[in-house]
Length: 568
Image 1 (spheres, one colour):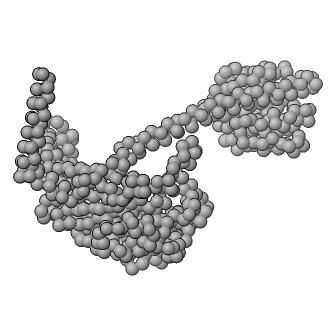
Image 2 (cartoon, one colour):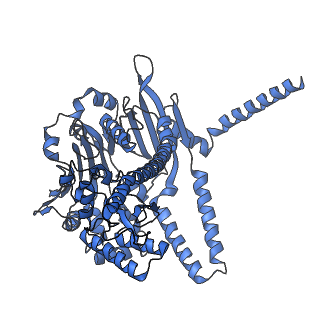
């Protein structure tokens, strides 16, 4: 009975707190902020979030001021204290000029817009809003423009095959206007701009202000590795030709660059067939294209706005805004192909339900708002950002480690198989010595190995499995390209038993070299950087301590082989 009374008391207390909170929320400043944000969102959907940064911003300013005051009164050395105070002063100015402290609230929501024939959500309406204080003048808010414009013309320009498109306002002159409110910042930065860039800072910022367009569209079957079928276009303002001149100077440093009066192109077809980057200046607008015949294909393609997919996404969205962002289904297919290749098809990524969406951003009298139609809601977007992307990053890292481990295992197998094959070569050398009064083949390099082939050794025995060499079809066709080993001539059975007769080509294995010694021993030398025969000879000298005469002769032979095969 006591337990039941406790539960009842807790329920009544919770109800009282909830009701009191609801009554006071509508009259408090926080409550009004909540209602203003919530009124622009959909409260009956799959996602709803309202945030009030008031106390966070107040705490940051208060604690920041305390920290600066504490540092100013501290006994720290001036070389530590003064730079910190200077940075703090600059940060405080930037904080207020940016307008971060003018933010009063923001929120996001998602609701189902359309369902499929099975009743499952197929399309969502995603809304977001940012509220500012009355008369907000921060550079951060002015940077993206202050007015809306019709967007139908931009929509009509998109071609079928568009994977991503964005068109938005960018007004960096707002930064200049904010800097002019300070005592010295604008003047100092202007002097730097004149000295380094040879143009006044205000003139530069105003010259690139305005509309920016970005477009990525893909041909059917676009290849993420060779980039064939991938096209991109970037359009932005360049009224003073500043960007064009700077990009042109950089392009001249690259091979395959062709310069014209108002354009230049960079030919990358040697590495990527058909790929050309072209930059041109027309009517104070800079056009940068990526791909083969990009402008021609853009002009000749059917329009995306006429497709059912785009019409459904654009349905009910504002006709005017400060900009838009579009993600098309071709992007999901392209990324799925790219990821599958990244994981060598060990993981096959399915693009059966591609992500697509269209978002329109608007300037409002008291802030900003965005409304979008998309195949995913904010729950899925947050999952992708916070869980899926880190998961794939971890999997990718583990995949690289797995591949490295797999390569190590394969390398060990190749090295052991190499040793096994050298048994036949060793036996052929010993057999040859038995029939030539203890002398091994006298000819240097490949000539000595040809003698072994003429005496019955199979050409495949002279191929290391860790190399890309191919065995000769017959002993008479044997050349340098059919051999993975290097032969040291002139030794006999009476020579130092630990001198080398034959060694691996230095790059057959990673960190190891197999060697046949005069006494018939086959050893694996652990050499981290066996880049040439001289290093192998030096390693053997350290291990077996040859006489001075023996080492000089060995080193001379190694040097001759290095010179012959350019292993310097």
